[in-house]
Image (cartoon, rainbow, N blue to C red; front, side, top):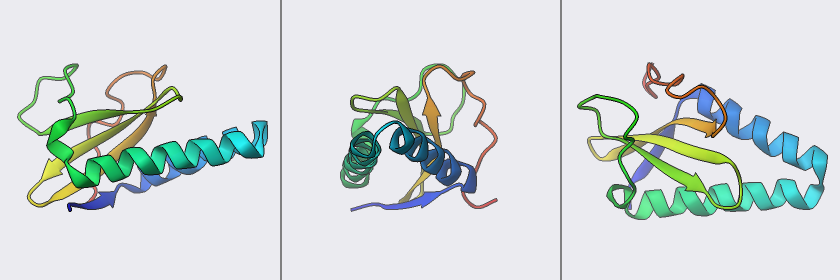
Length: 105
């Protein structure tokens, strides 16, 4: 199983999204958190099974995973034996705004 590291900005995005859905409905907030956790667990188990992000030209191993039932993507980069969560990105946001992020910075 692969370890996950998060950028501070990705943590903030996840908390913001969960908070928004929690304000709409406690059930919806819990559902978002559950779907996000399940998607992250899938990444942790087999990070290479998810599609590489096709919107950028880079040698970096950046992948995207949809959060089921919600308009969010998990953007991650595989580095060494670790997966770095770069963003929890709403699908309507400007693409690639997170590109300069690294978990170790």
